[in-house]
Image (cartoon, rainbow, N blue to C red; front, side):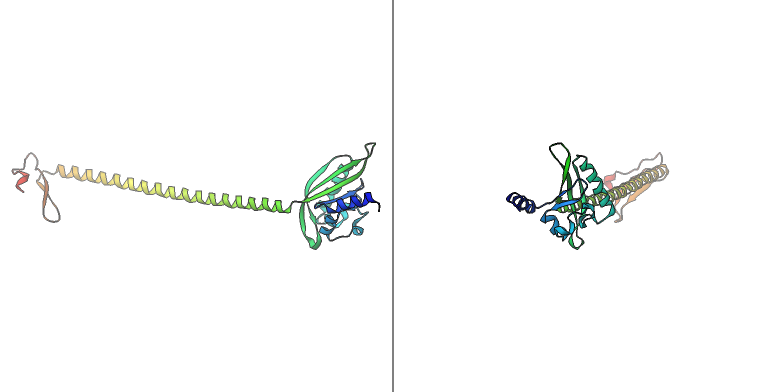
Length: 214
């Protein structure tokens, strides 16, 4: 191994993100130590294998199929990037921000593909927690709004009943007053202690005494 290759491997294996080199047909040529340790793999386990057949991508056939399509696009010279769940050691599933970048020779022909993956599981979990908190807050707001609506409806109902009762009472008082005024006889009003309060004259007759006499 010459000095140039040593420097390349030193830099390659010290990156914190998953990275590696592929042939344009998706055959794995290199994978850095971060990717290998995540998958619980050794380079000899995966080198010269199609990337979609390696452990990282075997969590579902949909994941493998999407990667195959991505390799085809990158081999045509397109930069491809998407989020995907990959499988690690002890069946640990991690969400990564994955990309494929084509490398061209001096003639513009794609000769290599560089793949990179950045672990974004923490950010995804934060997003999920925030979404859950937002949903719970929305639910509490809806419940509180419903409670307030019910309370307002009950209050309006009580106010309506009170207004109807007051109207009925006023109508009853007016009716009683009209009935009393229609009576031709003298009427005296005395409270529960026997104290004279007031009176009503008989029809066409005035009370012959002054009220101060009582």
